[in-house]
Length: 482
Ligand code: C2O
Ligand code: CU
Image 1 (tube, rainbow, N blue to C red):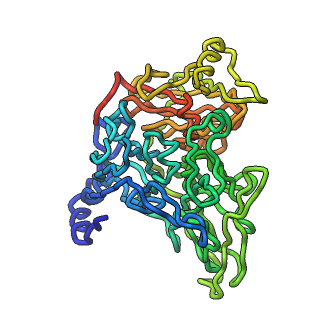
Image 2: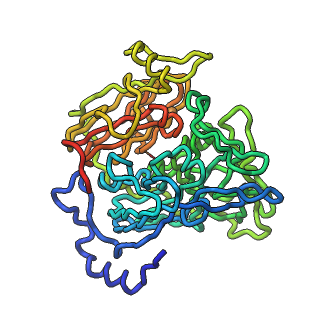
C-alpha cells in the first residue's frame, strides 16, 4: 500500500485549513466532502493461498485470501479521504468486493448484478469513493459469500478519526471460525441444507487474525483500543474479558456513549464490530483468560498475559468519547413506519412458515427456499424492492423475528439507530448497520433514507441470506450507478 508523505499531507491540510469544516450544500444528509489527504491507491487481489490456521504439526490450510493473507491487509484511511481500490479477481469464479458498513455511493457497493457486473476471473474492477465516517469496518465479497468469505476472503477497513482519542495501542482482532477436517482442510460442504435451515455454517476452529492465538501480551497501566470484527459466516461471539472491565465506545464503527457491556460480555453477531477501551489493570506477570460464552459450551479464546514490567502504575484518565459521525438524525415527528417480518427455518423438526402467506411459503420451502422477509424468499440479487423509500425522508422499520433463530440484520448504504427492543427504548439509541435479533425479538430501527440507490437488506448469516433472507430497499427512484 502506498504511504502518504508528510509534506504532501501538511501542505494539503494547510490549503484546506479554514474551509475544512464546511459541509457542501446540496449533498444529502450533510455529508462533508472535505479531503483530509490525497486519494489513496490500493490493490486487492482475491486468490488462492495457504495459511497456517491450525497450529503445527497440523498442515497449513488451502484458503482463498486477499493479497495472500488471512485476514486480508488492514486498509487504514483517514475520515474524509478518497480511496481508489483496484480489485483483481484471481479466483476461478466471479466475485465482487463490498465495503461493509461504509456509506458509499450505490455503484461502489459491490453487489453483483444489482450495482455492478460481477468481476470475471482474471478481470479487475476499480472501486473509488470518499469515506464519510470514521470507525471500524471490513470488506468481503458479496458473491457466493458463504463460500468465498467462508474460505477466507475478508479484511479489516479502519477509518481514523480526524481527532483520535489517546490510547497506547490500537489493536484489531478479526474473529472468524472455520470448519476444518482432521487434515486441517476447509470442509467443502458449503450451502448444505442443514446449515441453511438452522444456525448457519458454524465452524469448529476459532481464529483471531487468522490463527489460533495463545497469548495476547499486555502491560500493566496500558490503555488499548480494541477493534473487534466478527467475520464468521454464522458464529455469534460473547466475550468475557476475565477480570477486566472493557468499555464499549463504538458499535459497527459508530460512536456510542462509553458504557459497560450488558452482563460484562461483549456480544457480536456476524458482521458486527465493537470498539472497546480495554484498560490493563492486572499485575505484572498475571494471566487472564478471555473466553467466549455465547453457546452452551464456553471456550478459551486466548489469554491476556502481563509482561513482567508495568508500563505505568495506573491507566490514564484521558477522555474516551469519540466525536460523532455524519449521519443525519431521523425526524421522529415525521417518520414513516414499515413492518418487516422474518419467517422460516427449522423448528422442532418442522419448517416454520408464519401467518402471512404461509401457503405460498410452504411451496417455496419445498423448492429449497427456507427464509422469508414479509413472505418473500429471495432467489437472487435482482428483485422487486421490499421497500421503496423517498430520498431524504425518515423511516422507522418495525422488525419482528418470527423464527426460532438469531439473525444479524444488515442494511446497506446507511446506518440506523436502534430505537427499541421488545417495546423498550434502548438506552443508547446506538447507530448500527447490523442488528442482532434474538428469536422472537422485535426491534425498531430508524434512519434517514439519504443515500439514493438499490440497497441490500439481509441476514448476515450467509447461509440464511443465500436461502432467501434478503431483500432490496430502494431509496429514491431506482438504481444509481455511482
Ligand atoms: Cu457484509 Cu451485504 O454485507
Ligand atoms: Cu439469519
